[in-house]
Image: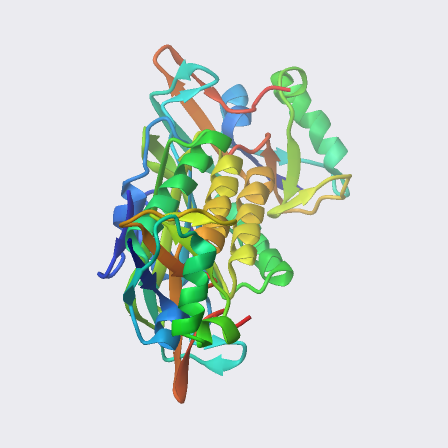
Length: 80
Length: 80
Length: 136
Length: 136
């Protein structure tokens, strides 16, 4: 299945991508995606912190992903 | 000596005056003026509450008055 | 800008008066004329002030706010005379480096104004009028 | 009015959007671009947002404020893109029957916005630039 990952702010800067599509096994969860992300973009693991949002919603724990999900990497926000 | 008394809001309404000049003995204080006010305008005593200001300053206790002083009757304020 | 005015109050002008390149926050309080008070329909308000003393007290409030918080600029404008429903009675604008102080200073100003500044509000109803808080 | 905008923010328009004849109080918070941060000169800011989620989170803040306080109307407008010194980054306006709730609800909105809404600020200095709060 495919999930689309969006990068903002420092995560965009560190990866060099604003979005990237990952092909995962069915039933993969956020932890699986996280491993893939860290493999592809090691700086995400070592240099910054971020939360996940799936389909515009913060996910604090883990969650099984579905084909077509939009996953966003949310570094510490700084609006206002 | 002469002191000028200003009336605002409900004190103006109850007395019918926006200002009134009182001729007092030299060295008269606010208590003397207050007696004169209550004699001249009995409703000030029975129907409302107010503070005194002398020359634009709230006076919480008593104070000796001087010729030419401007005394204002300040009913409860309600700006804003 | 500290003033009393018979004219309509221009909020934008007051906000513009407190902008500062050193300030990251502006809090603005606007008091407007409500169409009711304690469940009774209000037609309009009529504000009266002891003008020289009111200005003196407003300046004291501004001075005290500047002593208590890192205020960059502070403006207070209060209406005098008749104001219809929806019109502005008072506008207070405060700029500070950070947001918390702007809220605190602005709220201090309006709270203190309502306690100390010699301005009186007459509420005009369909069937009469009353000076607010005028009886013991 | 809840929106993100690439254009200059018009404060007067936002204030006008929250006036209500049932409201006696409006509190407005304006976040502006300061010329310095932690003692370092700032040239400009660049705001990026995850727009659909940012709008969703802003609407949730408005909803929560309306549940907690007797809000008549509430508007939040946040800038996206480059803003120079003195320009507006965010404007929040809240109208309520009485003043205390307007301050509390407005402060709640800006405090929560800064914690939850996916918007990021890049500070541009004379000698470089940095995403604010971007490192652990």
